[in-house]
Amino acid sequence: MTPTDSPQVVIDQIASETLTVPIVGTAPLLVNKFSEKAKRQMLDNMQGRKSPKQAKDPKAEYEAAFYMIKDGTYGFPAIAFKAATVSASRFYGKSVTQVGLRQCIFFTGEPSEDGQQMVRIDGEPLRQLVLMDMEREWKQLKARYGAFAEFAAMVADDLEEGAA
Image (cartoon, rainbow, N blue to C red; front, top):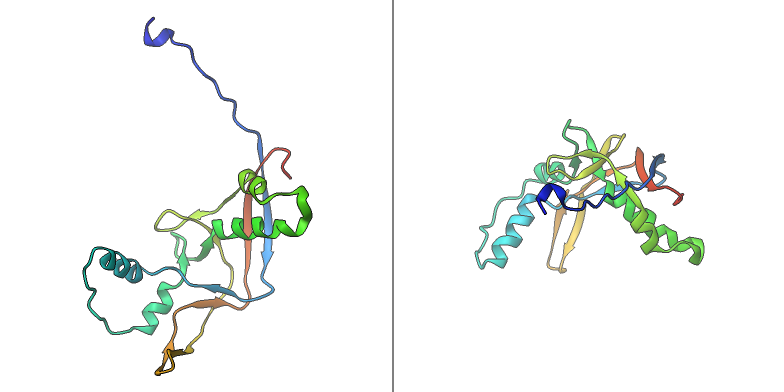
């Protein structure tokens, strides 16, 4: 039997449909992307290297807290919208399970610089400075996260046929 004569397995594509849902925020959207600096410090710590102390740059920390789409606009991970949808399913009784829902919905977006799927966020971010009590010894002003007081988004969800 030659390789061209071998039996072939054909898998039919699962029928799906795309549902686009408009989202209008009723509460602020807090954004706090895990920074490259924090990732580097954690990796150094796991490898036994000591990261040198660096001066704080509140403006740079604030800007690094946002997720960006490749075209430079603000985004938010599509997987976060999926997680919120799956979590909310517990309010609909036992007919919809979180596992079942997780398996049949797929949120899509636009790619970010690191390849994550991002949902475009329409809105202007606020800069919020927070006074934090660091173990009651001293206080520090932090600008580590951004927030959108008013925002909107269009979430695209690919559903398996019959799941809606």
